[in-house]
Image (cartoon, rainbow, N blue to C red):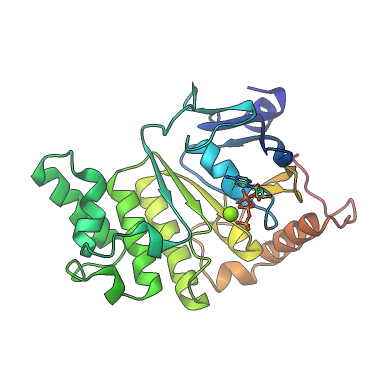
Length: 272
Ligand SMILES: Nc1ncnc2c1ncn2[C@@H]1O[C@H](COP(=O)(O)OP(=O)(O)OP(=O)(O)O)[C@@H](O)[C@H]1O
Ligand SMILES: [Mg+2]
């Protein structure tokens, strides 16, 4: 691990997931320039950055679906070269991640088909319950709203009991009210299960609201502009937290970083 990361996590556990000088080119196009970052265990980390800065590319490299051109990704000390054990991913587009011909329970059970029946049924029941969809097991995805379908996708990810849950703009295609509900659902589930969560978003409010730890990416080809520890208390609440002067301060700070605007030294809180 690099010195920077050792210093950053000196007080706590070493990060579960580490990116060291990761870059990725597609032909002449340098999508990700040089990313060094850590994702601490049992916390919510958020990657925030402008469109096209390589966020999805980074998640693909973390999930072993794509490999860096240079640099290394390690998960629990092992170099990632394929999809790691204990990883689950929720994609932005739920309409493409669920099987339209399968009812909710079958969609959730699909990745568990190797498990004994009883265990599988128990996990399906528990994860459907966790996302508040008990009683809707026999619906087809097309009979549900977008927000409900995304809950099914989250239930499916939880049913595999992941250590690391990756989410690529999971709430980008739902309305604001549903988005707020799904943000709170994620925080509740994370607090209950203690899983490590890494969310990608380009929504600044969402990044501050969800995160313990924010990795702010620069414009492409991306590098880490800054990492921020979010010291807002938990449990969080859409109204109280978002009216907390500290929330407003952090949001302003992230906004400035993303716009590349300098801020007065007194208010800066750099850990990069
Ligand atoms: N498979 C690929 N082949 C070629 N170029 C790619 C591929 N995947 C990504 N890129 C390029 O890499 C860059 C980063 O793309 P990526 O999708 O990772 O960005 P992003 O930050 O997720 O954007 P958005 O916020 O719009 O989802 C873009 O220039 C994109 O065109
Ligand atoms: Mg993307």
